[in-house]
Length: 81
Image 1 (spheres, rainbow, N blue to C red):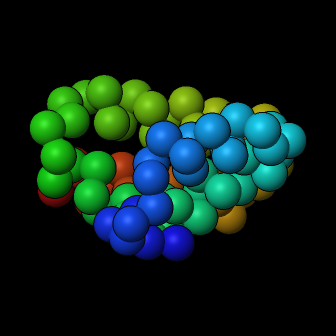
Image 2 (cartoon, rainbow, N blue to C red):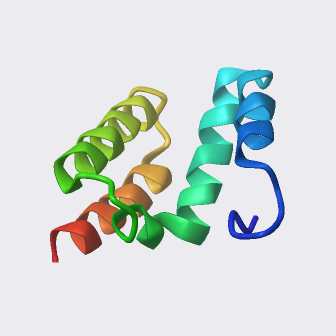
């Protein structure tokens, strides 16, 4: 999924809200795989980005989805570099 395409980001968010929570979190993970590096290229405060990613890790850990945790930890490490 390319967030830089002509997809309206509000439509994407609306679609995510209609999904089952597990499916929504998996979709968020998929988006992070494609564009996780873009999180810091915007005017997003680094601390807020890392806090949000840590919340995602907690959710995936709780649901025993450790592969997703590792992916997000890699993104956090990129943010800290």
